[in-house]
Amino acid sequence: MEMEKTYEFDGNVDMAGLFGSFDHNLKLIEQNTHTHILNRGTDVRIVGEEENVEKAGKVFSNLLSLMERGETLNDQNILYVISMVNEGIDQGASLLADGTVCISAKGRAIKAKTLGQKKYLEAIKNNTITFGIGPAGTGKTYLAVASAVTSFRNKEVSRIILTRPAVEAGEKLGFLPGDLQSKVDPYLRPLYDAMYDMLGADGYARYSEKGMIEVAPLAYMRGRTLDDAYIILDEAQNTTPEQMKMFLTRIGFGSRAIITGDITQIDLPSDTKSGLKECMKILKNIDDIAFCSFTEKDVVRHPLVQKIIKAYERYDENLERKRNYK
Image 1: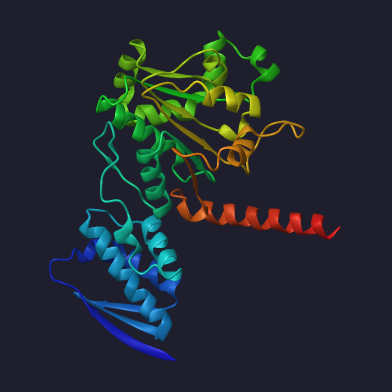
Image 2: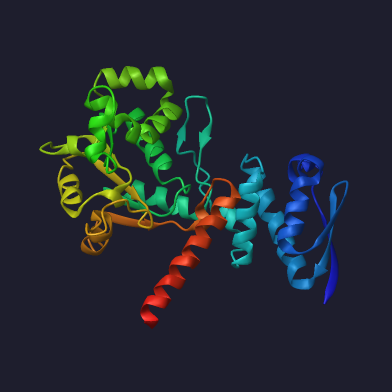
């Protein structure tokens, strides 16, 4: 049954920020709640099916909560709030972490943007080893680097070590110009980018020269004991079981480790097991080790990325059903 409801906002609310440029935010809420919304000064009139009108009202309540925390509304956080309301999480925005994880080199506050990210950061804080597993764009690596930089700045660790397997390397390395480091640098570029964002290019270069920050291929970790360090293993789905075991046994006293990966994007040969998939079974019941799973709802890139991930999931599920049917 269609109904109409009017919401009155406090005069102190930044209505331009709430409604968006040319009412862009209102149109986004309309499209995704199947309602019709009219704004008149500090009032909003919502027309539609009763259930949809109630949902739209809850969306506005959550968005106001975000704005009170100093967040600027954009397509990503508006769509995320709508998805939480659709799942019955009425005050999901207020559950997000209020604290800042890290301040970037440009002074930008880095915070959790989804409940999945919040749980991930809490796990990192409370465990020696944390696994972040999920699709691209969920902030797994970026938040791991932010946590590492914060611990480094607070002198909780004396160095940061970032590593990932150069799985695509193999025979191709010989065809690339330069020494070994310059050959593997392209595979480490995402880690460099995150460090530059947190510390600035000059800050990274300064700490790197002193040996306080190291970005290296996973093979460089063999035979080392890494004490008093924050260690991040990225793209862990491309480790073999032997490499994963080697990495996990490098961790020394006073160290923390974060392992990130996406088990749907394994680039290993088809006859090679993923070290990440195997250790998820082996280590799942060990104290002080946490496993955090992300979904397409935690994607903080373009909204289209969520749809792409969901489409691939459906495709894989259909393939699996066909295999089981045969």
